[in-house]
Length: 140
Image 1 (cartoon, rainbow, N blue to C red):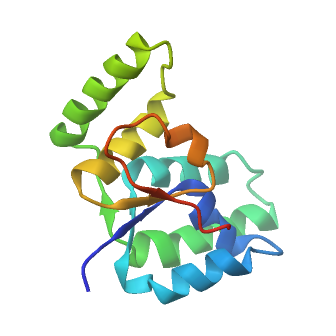
Image 2: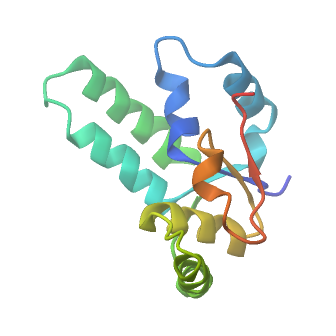
């Protein structure tokens, strides 16, 4: 199967919550061979992990999840020149409309768009303004 979905931070972090969304878990299991993420999302996850106290069980659990699941097997797309070009155009367009997007969300959107992937996120509203971007919420 080909890669079809780019998972946002809130989708990837759902699996390690004490009571994860069954809908998200079902979708990720059903589409596991079609899943990917972005280098920007990996940064967000690592940053969140490294902010936790070194000796905290939550940090250890999150680090193990990142090492064994995300970094070890999930395809990760980088923010490359094609993404930068699309992102800059969309950022300029949205800013001219008085709707400047958060920079990181723009990077994630760009990576999904230029790689022809569906962005999966809980935060649909954060990505509504981007033209040509397909977004799904697996929490529904």
